[in-house]
Image (cartoon, rainbow, N blue to C red):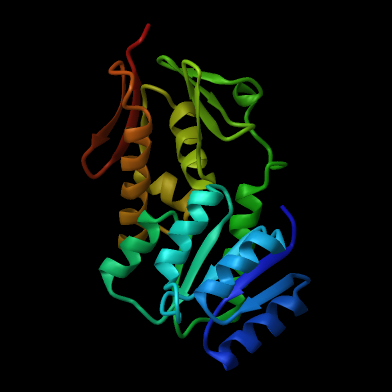
Length: 232
């Protein structure tokens, strides 16, 4: 993954500090002060990572992220905002955000979260050998290398986080995957808000796998999930 980061932040002081801090940590930073210029910069800068404030002039951060997701399902997005209500956090994750950080925040923690997402999402990261070729899930083929689900002749691109969660479910097909293991591995922390984020991604994956009734993601209350494949 490249080191280009797009930061959309309307507060001049905060934007300056973020750009200086990230630049000092070897990132190439493009800073925009509103949603409209942020969308234009995303299309032209080739950024491989987005940090988006929610309360922006023009296009708000949620709408901006939604538009970015329509054009690129894979680019990681962190929301960095003063809005800390539960419904805002859940909305951020439901729109495809990879993390949601509330202000004030610790710069070193932000850097750790950025690097954790970059490392996890790197296509060069180690994968288990079962994913060198597409994996069968009922009538689907799960192509981890190209991050997509294939059903008949249709390909549906997955986000990095969807790909991560589905990969872990596939590694343990027809067996329980504990919520705590998923949260610790891909979110870094097992807490309420991360748990709700995980539920959003499970709901998305259920919809993506909904064309084959022999495939289900079963919920084991308070324990975890089972990717059930009854096609054989």
